View 1 (cartoon, rainbow, N blue to C red):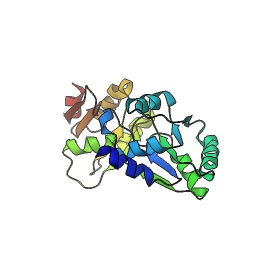
View 2: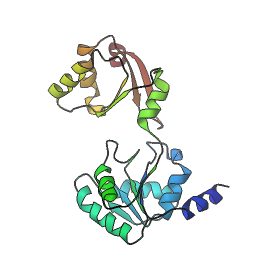
View 3: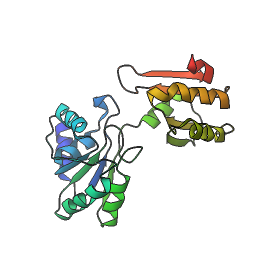
View 4: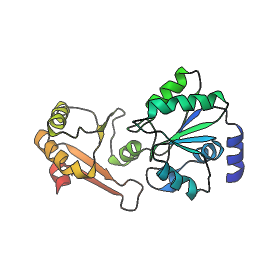
Length: 217
C-alpha cells in the first residue's frame, strides 16, 4: 500500500522547486510525500550534504546533492533556475525541519518564483508546533521569534518588550546560552510560566514547565 502511494505521488510531480520538511529528530516523522519527492527529484539542494546523505541513505534513496547554504544561496539560486528551465524536479531541504524557517531557503524560493517557476511546500515535522501542542497553551494566537539575540544587551532589550505580553511567545535558544537567557527572563518576568522543550522527538526528549526559577532549578 505504501509503495503504491509513493509511486502515485512520484508520478504526479511536475518541474518545480519542492521545499521539503525533514524530521527534526526521529527519522520516522518524515512524510510519505516527502519520500516520494526526494526519490523522484533530479536535484536535492541541501544545507549540509553530509546530513542529508545520511537521511537519504536511511530510506535507500540515491540523489544528486548540491550544497545550498546561507553564504552561497543567492549564487546557487541561478543554478536551480537553470535546472528548472531544463525541466528538472528540484527539492530543497535543511538539516532538520522546514527550509527558510530559521534556516536557508527563503532567498532561493524568492528567486525561483521571480523566474516564473512554482515553489511547492511539502510540509512535515515542526519543532514550534510540537512544543505548542504539549505546552497547554489555550490561546489561538502566538508569536514566533526564532533564535534569541546572542548578545546579552540585545536579548535583554527584546525580553523587556515581552514583559507585559498577553500572548504566548515561542523562541529558540542554543544549549550554551540557555542559562544566561533564563537569568535574563528571571530579571524581566520572574512569575511568568514557561515551557522548555528540548530534543523534541529524540531519545532524550524533555519538557519542563513552571515559573522561570523552577525551570532554572
